[in-house]
Image 1 (tube, helix red, strand yellow):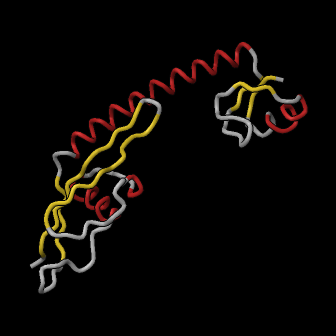
Image 2 (tube, rainbow, N blue to C red):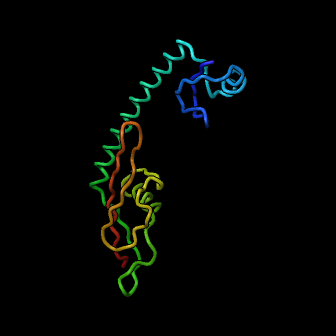
Image 3 (cartoon, rainbow, N blue to C red):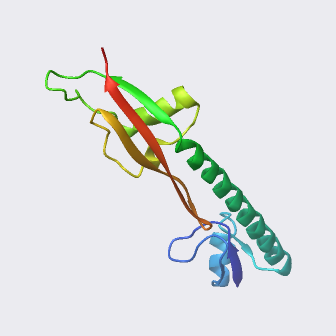
Length: 153
């Protein structure tokens, strides 16, 4: 029996793959659980239509990410922190705090897990951190945000 997978199935295939399975496995397990549909001419046409729509959506997401990367390159996120007698910071500014600062200061929402540089900003002055804005079939978009840390007086 030929089926089209509607979701990734471990040791079988990825979403959208057309595979051949035994009749019992297809009719008793995959199809009732919504993991696959029987491969027919209409389901093949539907799959092609869905793939074209998904490709167009991925291209649009990449364009949005490129526009956000351009906007981020001109932004400075400002932080003030306490400094010791020797001029060193107490603590550091984490990616979570930077994401919150972007939201508060510039109304840009970025997930803290998207930061490529996992280390915190722990020096006074300017620090540049890379953010993975898009990763998919159409390529990858990486933006850079400038973080400015100054002494709290």
